[in-house]
Image 1 (cartoon, rainbow, N blue to C red):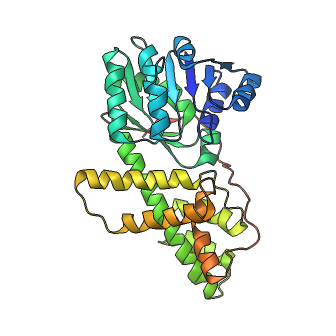
Image 2 (image 1 turned 30 degrees about the vertical axis):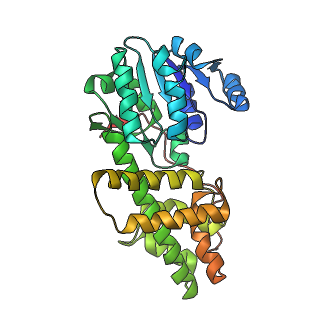
Length: 313
């Protein structure tokens, strides 16, 4: 099975590398030629254009940073929609806007090709090991055909239903993770101001009803001071913005989401587009002249779980 992979960024590069390690024949494409050269050294083929990549693949995977870039790759002259052939499978692994996503799927299906969405959740450290979770929306037939590839990309794989359902679920989970992160900033502020031992506080939260995946992961790099979660401010603002836009489209007036979005926007303005998203807590560190630091926590997260092939949940 030949795979074409577009987008070798923080997440996409790790996913594409998993396919190489599982001996798939893969052709890659990215605007960053240095990233393409790295994959060529690992044994991947490189494409000169989207059309070139589509011709050489049975399955096309896109993992891109924004709806705008997704649209360019899919809709441009010689792009995926122009070039895709009957029975080829396109898998969108980007976190993008659901209306645009459904429109792209419809155009793909008009070419008698198969469209699937497969956003991932669980952090870059789990994407690197293939232990990340994957939500898949689209036909059951397409899901079954793509499963040999999906199970090498992630561990827990959920078929969410019709096309569009996976992206909505992903936006919801990303929003919840961001709420947890913002709340952690306030929790660490109170802990610091109360002169608690921060290492013991970490253990206490982890052992309590206040625990979360975000605490178990992002709190570690916050306590280290690196903040290196491999996810940036511009992307977290995009995700929370997508959640708020979905609520607006559905006519739902939310209470927490607008506040969280304002906090993220302020953090992005303060620290910059490419600052790590976990630096949102640094707003409170700066405001109160404190630091959430203690020894024994890593500069960057590593997934120590044993690699295993994915399975449907």
